[in-house]
Length: 451
Ligand code: S3P
Image 1 (cartoon, rainbow, N blue to C red):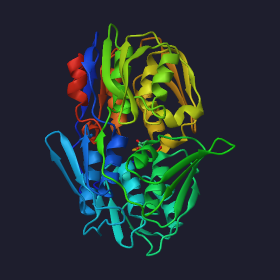
Image 2 (cartoon, rainbow, N blue to C red; image 1 turned 180 degrees about the horizontal axis):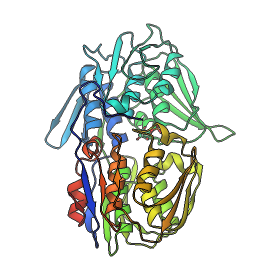
Image 3 (tube, rainbow, N blue to C red; image 1 turned 30 degrees about the vertical axis):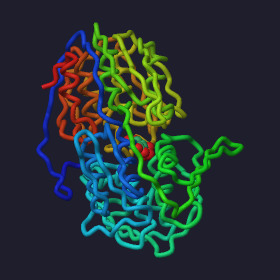
Image 4 (cartoon, rainbow, N blue to C red; image 1 turned 180 degrees about the vertical axis):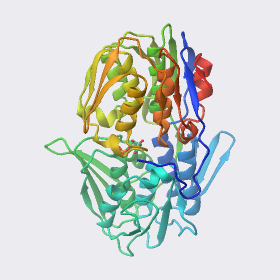
């Protein structure tokens, strides 16, 4: 879906890499801060009264793009020692930016920021790289239009585009048609600067960081379940938000790469510390345990209202399973690396309900299937399913994988190369910087051979 053409200065020279087979990954590591919570810390900090202090913020390109955008909207965002400081403008007091907000590769940052500015009567332009410019924005723009937002885009609700909120935006009640935390969050953030109560109805629960953090910042937020089990989340607009001290837990999505590596590389014993264990994020760990993974969680604690713990894995003989569609929201970013685990399992792994993978940083369903095939793995790509027939610990490897500006495709197939018979190459690792700068040195410190 993404082409490597230049878009808004985001051209880069590809950085290919090869991962060669190793044995005995071992050690204890911690991965960087959670991307979802990092974006939201900056977005909410920017509209709170006072100084929000964030430790453990993910310092990857996606989050730095959100930091830049919040600066452009008037907030002072800077780092002091290990702490990020956000001097908020106060709710309703963002300023008109003088230049387009450049979100690079960041879908979450851009979509949530569209919501945040939707209740302001001034224009805000959004630009990004080739991948982001190919992703559908209508899913957030359509509900925001119901508040009175005007949108100008040459490319049918794709970036580059300009939004302009109504002088008198109206609060909406919106039933989210796809399971998307970004859509839910964009509407709730828009509601912050709209008089009255904005409600999102979420038939399928997605990651709940926005609602939890809004409550933490003192927003008037109410959550209830209806008779069908749908969640109704309401926020009252134009109330004051209060600056917070936030400790960002380690990202479970980033932790999934060393965890799957530890499971497939013979002789391994790997621990990833202080991982966020929010129930809306841990579908991969449940699935791996069903597959027979030796995966244990210890040192469970609550930090900043979130469950965290240390995850230890040892090399395991995995078995294929069926992953039900209703688990997809809790592991939506983890299917590429689950597919790598499935390639090493015995028997068939069937993943259902994957339609949302088609609109990630690339068409992740197709990119994963092509990467598996390039490495001799027998798989079938359906419209919204992927079936992987595993090699009981044996994967040929030797393939060259196209990563299509997608960090998670790059990391997943580098993990595959750690345990396949021949090395696996990926065409570009540059995008890994969008979420997990430390990936290569960290996995090499466990014993991987990425070069
Ligand atoms: C995110 C939501 C998910 C996920 C993305 C982060 C968030 O996207 O894929 O990486 O922080 O809200 P969708 O809402 O499109 O499922």
